[in-house]
Image 1: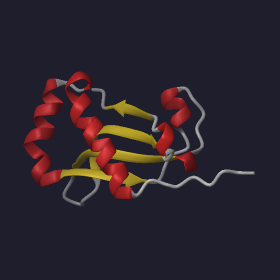
Image 2: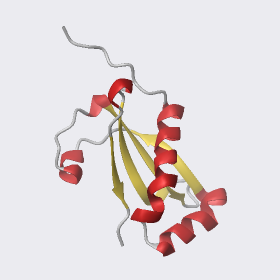
Image 3: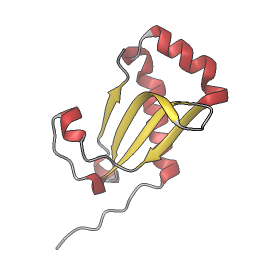
Image 4: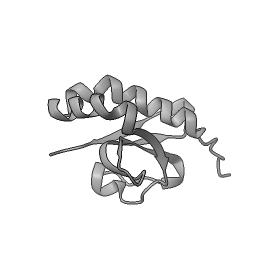
Length: 108
């Protein structure tokens, strides 16, 4: 019997990702990127749930089922309201009892 996964509410997934981002950004981003993010977040900042990509295996070295994870991006949007400066991409499990996550941080 296949277990039906209760998917994360988008707002909950965004909150989880943003909390992790705030906690870990200083250890994983360049100081210049942190300064840029802090200065521009109020005006251009965005935390968005996007369609879960299927290429996470290349990023994290583990094959995942895209249906079992939410993908969240944290970054800054441009004048066209498109996120063109992504500081972190999150993959968060929908499984509440085993809330694993992976993060790919911006590199310069």
